Length: 332
Length: 133
Image 1: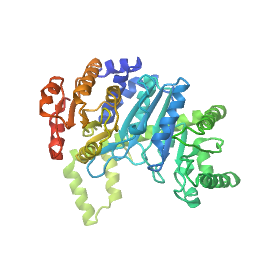
Image 2 (image 1 turned 90 degrees about the horizontal axis):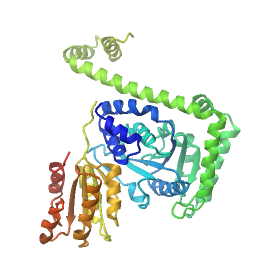
Image 3 (image 1 turned 180 degrees about the vertical axis):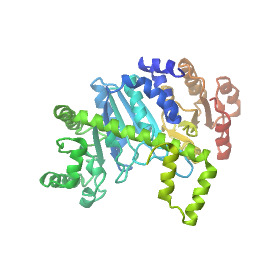
Image 4 (image 1 turned 135 degrees about the horizontal axis):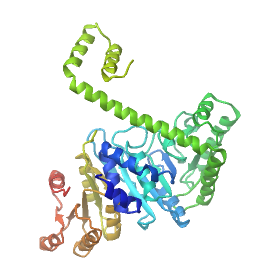
């Protein structure tokens, strides 16, 4: 097989093989399929930590300090930083590395920058595959930094075991805290830049919001529970200073507590099942979309006729879609 | 479904030099040309540069140097890349590179040498036309 040499090296923990395989899965979805198929058995050992938050909330600096704590414990850490692709030129400026401490050594920390290439949801199409490559490469902890998010980029919760949302003092009030979206998928709220005025107020706003969660049984909670089949974890709040490392000890304890909770309650296996489900769905979407595009491209005349019928109103778009589904060989 | 391959470029400033406006302008220009640009910032040691190249697997590395230390630092970077068997990456240096230093740097495998006032389009095309893979 074309990539077997690289894959053998990857499984031996070769850094360059990992880097090259990541490039390949980023650029070629067919190659990604081949590669993931052959490394899949070697995955599933890493603990995945998702970090999300608004642009400028300090995600990269926070990750740098957090990583330091992990490597002090002797862990091997993988970091995936996703930054946005320009919708206009397709280019991207990946600037997360600049915040990461430079003295991380190669055998302890692997940092990779990714452009999201237009994918919504805060991650890139290939992020899930890159996680698997770093997992097979031997990273025990994989930290995924999403693009600087707004309110609804929540895809990270499908990929990560623990989701940390970074908030900063002075950005948004208590109304922001009760809006739907990222506030609902958070396991640990971190109020970063705790030396700035308003940090305590931010903590208070979040804890008020969380109190509402627990005292009422909202429908959203029920949905979440159904989704995860879990006893809901009561999210925790901690304020930190990423520049000085203040309160990171407490944060690590909370992370540990969350991992323990996932294992004790058996939630972790539900996470896994849901992740496989949503991933397979994604792959199916890609594959079916490709099939449909191929079909349309190879039957352009026929499609043109149907389009004309829709224009004449003797057909409508829904019925036309049904015809295409029949052409695909999938019965409606 | 092979997506169009993106050119990935690493822009960095090796050595003790804080004048990074040029590097930032360049990073922006390459971004606007549709490339994925990693900017690692100032004060990069040769090891930092090489480690980043290993992990990020870029197609090109653009070193911005205005401090006069190019003759000392660039060959070290090239040597360390060689030690890692990295031979398919375009390595260019630009900034303030006197003409008399160019043959020496060329001998070590460096390219580019774009100085102040270079049209950004020239540099973009240089990258597009000199990739090694």
